[in-house]
Length: 633
Image: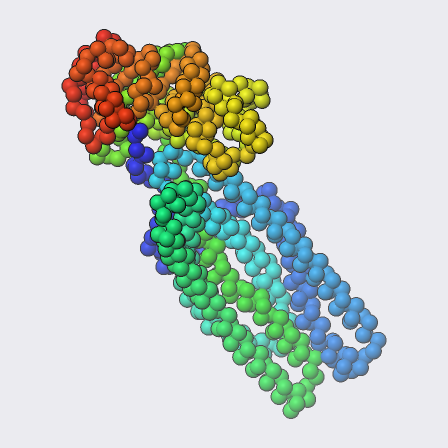
């Protein structure tokens, strides 16, 4: 089997710790991201925004009203003793608090509804986008870390919008209203109390520079931690078999400690604003109280205006503090939102051609014409390879590990595009048809079967979603899977667990074979499909596959040559080239052929083909079917 691709493409985002940008986000960057979020989602939530903004304005108005009414309460009730105003003032206060409570509830529900929808929408959008990216992207990106990164960052879209909306509509309007009350009651005190603004702004600018850098590091470390935990749990059998518990525990423990340190650092940096703002606010409030007390005691001024001013100043503290922290929170949300858009902005590097048409395959003949391909620039995998898989016949591909056999299967399904040459099916260049229609005409069984969460019936139906229960059961019978399926606790409706954990390897393989059978595709690809089966099950499946392959073009990747002796055509590969072709009998007729030597090696060792580190250098020889010359790069 050809090793997984290692070609680095510019599709994959760098999930390693990079040297972060230490400059804080500019207003233009924030505005650009916000405009994009609103352009993509604003229209669908416009009425929810109207409700949320209206509720926020009511909260701001009632907060300012609470500060303003302190003056008539003190002056007219306590100082002038106007008992006739008590009922009206109390009713006004009660009404303001009721309105504030309902408005706060409406604001919270509206914002939560918008935020939850944004998270769900971007999760679906990211998954849809990931499904459009090529196989190379996923080979270059660890799946566990990718999933963790998405989970870590998707909330940034919601938080960025929520922070902006609440800061501008609620906190800024509330602060403006309270400052207006302060200026109305006492312009001189207002001017002096606002002197705390410059040092507070300086503190915010300093902290946001540090938060931006630490946040990106924290997101990446947490994604590595979650990815490592996921990998360890998925490979628990190997972990226990090789007694790797202590090593993995040490590795994950180190990542957890690093994540803890970064989170603690974020908390320390972010929360530094609290003592600074509290100290400045306390200085402002005590100064105002001292000066206003002097005026009331020495100059004999009525205290109503001062009480109203102090109330407005105290009430202004919370929105002012939230606005001061807004930039800190904005930086954290912006880092997460950017990382989501970095992923969404990746362009699929292997899309359909602009003039691609739907595949119209009839017989299913597959033809490789001088195909060359490489995963990395320095290492060619296929070199001017040519052969034909006849329609309705079984063609076996054999060769040592690393010869490029599995790469052929990947190229035929257009997981990658060829470097040169063409691949044709029924005379149609597969690069000029849509990938969807091409893959819809191919049924594939891999050497390592993969089952999805759900029931056995669900996993077989993934081959063709329109398949009936009867067709699913018939396919299972052909794959020699019906017997063990009916012995399961719930039969076909038995959950398989994560990647079929409740089934044995051979059972998983037979379910995957049934999935390929139910697809009813004209081309069948078998990548050592029976390697996980015992001899008895393999014999049953081989017999079933014999009937399934009738009338279909079948390409079999074989390591055990005993599985391909009845193939209509055998293609022998070595170092990315076709070195021999013919039937089993014709290839065995020459005792010096590569194929015959493979047979002798397997017969002696009882193993698969020899390792590619010691390739057989037998010269290419003529066979009864065809003489194939070794082609150079």
